Every structure is written in C-alpha cells, then in structure tokens.
Image: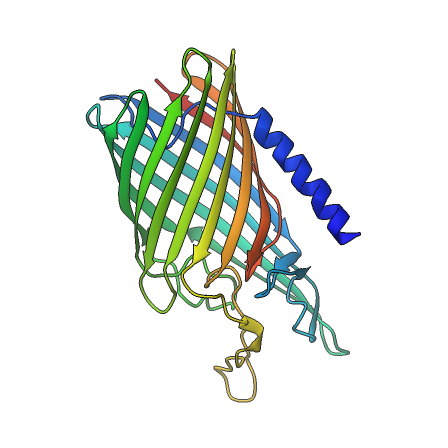
Length: 303
C-alpha cells in the first residue's frame, strides 16, 4: 500500500513537471539596470519527518515521551536581482521567519509544550557572472549566507532560525532557450561550505519553464546532499544542560541532512511588470529532514 501511494505521488509530481514553466531562470543574468523583485509569504505545517534511514515517520516518533508533535514555519521573504552590468547581477535574499514546535508529554503530569521563535534568519548575498548568453547560457554564482543576530540556542528551547554560522557557496548554472518556442531548460551544480560543526553540502538543481500568454509556469527540482552520511540523531546522547533534567530534543531543522524536493509554480501577469505567483514545495525523499508541504504566495515585479 505504501509503495502504491508513492507511485501515485511520483506520477502526480512528474505530470506537473512535464506541464509547467516560468518567467525567469537561474542560468541567465539581468540586463544592465534590469531587476527582478519577489516578495512572498510561506507556510509549512509538518507532523512527519524523514529519519536517518530515509523512512517517513511521525515527528519525534522515536522520542517515546512525546506525542501529537508538529512543526510550523510561517515566513516572509524578499528576493531581488539587479543587473549592475549586462553580464553581472547582484542577488539578495532576506527571510523573516516565525517557527513553532508543539509537543505533548505523554505522562500523567504531562501537557503541551509549545515554543515559538521569530526573527530574521540568514541574509543571502550573491553575485552572478554570465560566461555565455546565446544560444547556450552559462553563468557562475558565488556568495554567502550571513546570520542576522538570532540566538544559536533560544532561551525558550524553541526552534533555531538558522545555524548561526556564516556559510559560503558557489554554483555553476547552465541553460538553453528554445526560442521561438516559449520554453527553456536549466540546471546547476553548487557547493556550500558551512562554518562550525556542520558538514558541507552539494546542491544540484534542474528546471523547465514555459510561457503561455500572460501565464508563466515553472517546475524546479532541487537535490541537497550532505558530504557525509547523515547520522542517527536520535541515537546520540540527549543534552541535559540543567542538573537532573532539561534535555533538549534533537534538532531536525538545522543539521546534516539529505533532501530532494520539487517546486511547481505559476505566475500570472497582472500588468506589464507585475505578477502574482503561487508555488508548492513538496519533499520527495530525505534523511534527517522534515516531511511536509510548503505553500507560497507572492508578488513579482520586473522590467
């Protein structure tokens, strides 16, 4: 039955992949003084996770003292691109997040434990340089993610907004447009170096896009792989910072993990420069990662 469910799920997502496309792609830079601005909200509710073996299970299922657990992520993100020259684009991303965890202690003296952490997460700053433009697009992108002053260990034992460490990354983008057909393909390979105790990550992406009058459709697939085998985080000793208790649950939001996700989106043009975009982020598989669907709605402004 589980196998049949995943077959239907993969068939549904592949059908979307074959039918979708979008307004822009990562392999191309903006023209000089050209811009792309996207302001969008996100919502994730998850009560499932992928364990270190890649199996989907209830959140914190291996912590027998807890039940009825969930994680909620509500965010607002500003993403921007600006062409400093025809071949060099500045890219910036600023996320604000409100993260909530809820657990119920399964004992006579237990009760609900709810903790929320809110604030700016990691500021992303990148530069993208075009090597080729036509007929094949080739570009390199490099930059960093910078923590914006949030606490590495929230005082309320709530979820962390990020790793609290600077990470550096570089990507190679390639793409091709099939003009006059309104369709393109693109992909990238990147490497992220994470400071601190966490291990580095490799990011591989692919996308297909299609323009249909005022409608722009796109499907984006991203595979994130840690350079190590993600450990059994539940098999590690529980940290007890306070004598006699105060244990901290393993952090599955920030850690060493694998995750593959597909992101179909649709952008509808409202005017010549303004659009409304809706997208879904659906995980396909992972290790030590959340298993829940993210929904996003935002405005796109471009020239």
